[in-house]
Length: 118
Image (tube, rainbow, N blue to C red; front, side, top):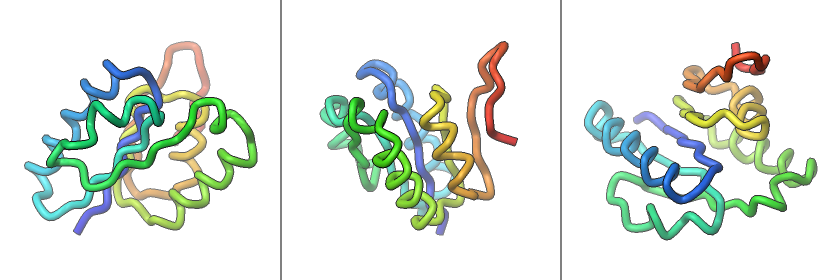
């Protein structure tokens, strides 16, 4: 069984659009578990989605504190995800992906920026 994390720490519309990833992954891996990491104020957009098994809600302001970000990184690493999707690729989410050690990390490389993902 695959464990998949989708990180979308952006606004409500972005979270809604990216929720399609969960639907598509359930088609490819029917027995997978999909967790969604989103800002707490966007949870309502995906909370009844049958393709999402768990929602990890984080507070935008709290995530900017290094200690809180580090605790979240350790939590993600301990969960041992097989696949991590990071479509928006903010610095925080890139760090989560990098330190997660997930075998497959799918992210967006922003032009003129150095992303820490290999």
